[in-house]
Length: 77
Length: 165
Image 1 (cartoon, one colour):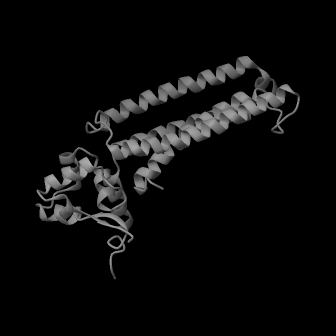
Image 2 (cartoon, chains in turn green, cyan):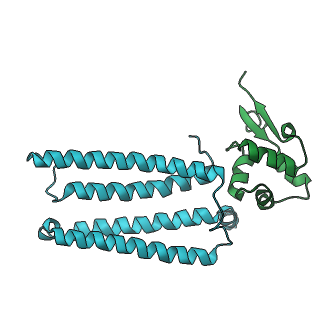
Image 3 (cartoon, chains in turn blue, cyan):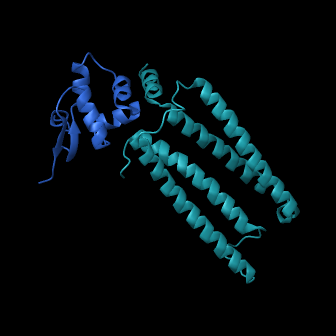
């Protein structure tokens, strides 16, 4: 059984995994680093909300990774 | 046990902004109930009296201000500095979605009230009702429903995460 979120068209991310790999960083800690609320981090993680470009770069900066390692785009084509 | 765990999880996921919106929603719902109950329990003479109506509207305003002030003081005590934190882009978007529904309801309310006023001026009742000052009640009702929609939509969109729908 595959995760339906992975096959979804649009922007997806690996924030949950990256948080876990970074000393099990909590959503609240990440939210404080990037200047948004924990609810926004939750919405981004579950692919319900696409972050602004600025927030996306900030998230990538927190994990010290390039943007395309954190976010990926899956088009319908 | 499972329900208890779900409740704890729900409380942990609830932001201060959600609590604030929920309190605002409850306060507005109580004011709406107060206004409607005043209308339902009023006599025909009272409904026709502009003095009685202005007293009810004044009470609604006083209740609104008093309840909002009390609720914000209580929320300020329990908050962990979230009250002064600015909204992020997502919250601003959700806020705008809430305002969209508010604007639609207010527009419909104002148009209905104007329609009723014009039709009543020509001795023809648009809504089969003997309620005096009906355009004013339509406006107040639209305002209260718009406020409820404003808070309700924000709560729903914030919780579901689906702000584009």
